[in-house]
Length: 337
Image (cartoon, rainbow, N blue to C red; front, side):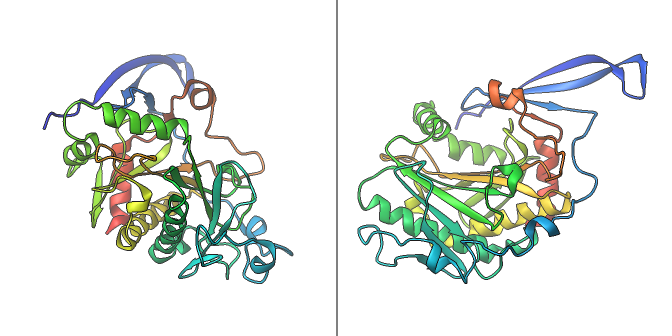
C-alpha cells in the first residue's frame, strides 16, 4: 500500500508585535495540501480566536410560544411521507422523529429532530443515544427514497444561528437528488480516480495511532483531517460502507457515540455552534469511496459576533484555522473514551 503524501508548506511572516508594534517578529504559518482534492488550508499561530467563556444562551433557547418541532405541535405543523417512501408517515427511532422538509432545496428532503419533548438540547444533552437514533431514522428515510431510484444522498446539521440554522430546536436535514453537491461529487470522483488501493482505506491505515488519530468505534474511524476546512474539524470514515443506505443500526450507534464525544469537546472549549455532514457515494457507489462524516465548530452566538467565514473560506475555498488538527485530536481523545 503506497503511502499518502501529506504536503505542508511552512512559511515565516514578519509582522509587528501586537503589544509592541515597533518590534517586528517572525511568526510561522503552515499551508497544508489535502492529499485527495489538492485544496489548501492555512494553520496560523500566535493570535487565538477561541472564546474565553461561554455566552449565556438562556434567552435564545427559552421555550417559545410556538415551535413547530415541539411535541405538542409537530403532529399539526408537519406533514407525512408518501407511502411510496415509507409506511411510517413520520419516521421515529427512540426520541428522534423525521418529517418532510418544507424547504425545497433538493428533490427529496427531510428534517430530523433529535428530540421533540424538549425545545432545546445543549451540547452535553446530545447524547450517543439521541444522535445515534437520529442517524438511524435518517438512514430509514434514505433507504425509502432510494427505493424509488438510486440518488446522491447526504445527511447534514446546523445548530444555532451562527451555523446557518433558522430554528433553535436542534435538528438535522437530509438531501436527495440526481445531482449531489459540489464537494460530494468531487470526493467521489477523486476517490474513484485515486491510483492504487482505496484512498479511504489507505488514509485510515496511515492515520491510525498517529497524532491526528482519535479512535475507532466498530467499523467507524475518527480522526482529524490533515488540511481542515473549518475550526476544530473531525472526520469519521465508515469502513466497507459505500453509501448512507449501507449504514447499519450499529454503525449509527457508533457514529452517534463518536459525534457526541466531539460535541462534548466543543462544550469543554466553551463553543456553542456546529455543523456536520454525512455524505454518501452517489447513485452508483463503489468500494473506492467510504461514507464520510465531517464535523466543524462555528462562531459563538453574540450580539456582535465574529463570523468564522471570511473571504478565505467563502471566495477562495481555503480555510484558515488557529488550532492545528493535531491539537484538536488530542483534545477530542480526552472525551472519546
